[in-house]
Amino acid sequence: MRAKDALGRFGEELAASHLVDAGLEILDRNWRCGEGELDIVARDAGTLVFCEVKTRTGTRFGTPAEAVAGRKAARVRRLATRWLAAHPQLRGPVRFDLLAVSRDVAPGQVGSVRVEHRRGAF
Image 1 (cartoon, one colour):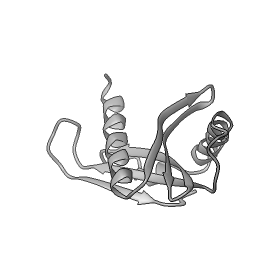
Image 2 (cartoon, rainbow, N blue to C red; image 1 turned 180 degrees about the horizontal axis):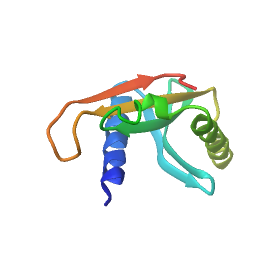
Image 3 (cartoon, rainbow, N blue to C red; image 1 turned 30 degrees about the vertical axis):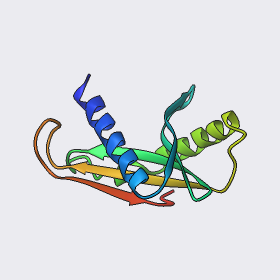
């Protein structure tokens, strides 16, 4: 497994745990269609929450949150429409959240990790 893939998987695991600890129910993870992938789909008290997870080990290329804007946010919205069409039994209000995971050191080393959960980020 490539280091980038391992870092992404690490961040998604941490984000999913964070969401469960915050009381959200995970409905789907790594859902794929021809246009791409949704990281996490959850439910928060009746609201369907489409979560984009971005993990970084430093800020050389910007913060994790800065990486999710414009085209990336639009893609997540398109994928959410596809997910809703594939799951017609699940309806309700929709929200788009960002989980920005920051890890101060490379995978496999000891360091600090932070999860920032931005509700309604885009």
